[in-house]
Length: 214
Image 1: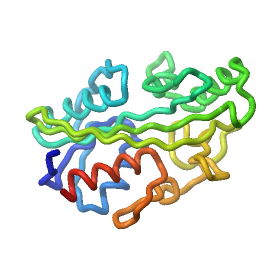
Image 2: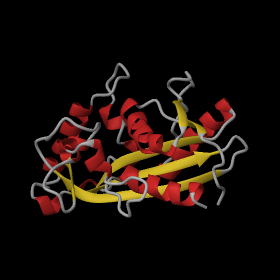
Image 3: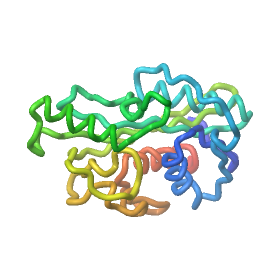
Image 4: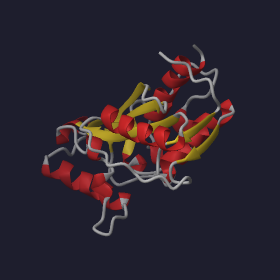
């Protein structure tokens, strides 16, 4: 494992919601972080078939373009009744012909697919959010951290917090969706706290424990 010895990094993302969440998590640690979007880096093609592969592609592209360490996230919603879909193609389900992303449309696609699969009861709608963080250096070295949170897909969507599929994901042990939680509630973690709730916070906790506290 390699320890991160700088507080200046690139957040290797063009997703505004994801950038905001990573900055919320990394900000209290004193990091100076600019996103790939702010730096006008070209988005690399995510040709991987796993979260790990796509996270690595994004982190290495930004690390080499900026000549400094970069932190990426590849995440998605994995639904058991749909054979793991949308999975690594979670963002693709939201794409419109003009290249924009519409997550209200994506959530409807998920619901239609579940109805087609006959998955109408909560116990038939088990799912998990997965987040894989990749920390990459310009020399090609990478470290990977995976976080998962179990839950259920609900319908109709509830809440306007968060982003993406948050309004239809109800984490296990809770009666509200990620879309109904504040950022603090959703992450459930900060430095000094032993537990984390969201998939991204769980992956981030591993990153901090491995690369910052080593």
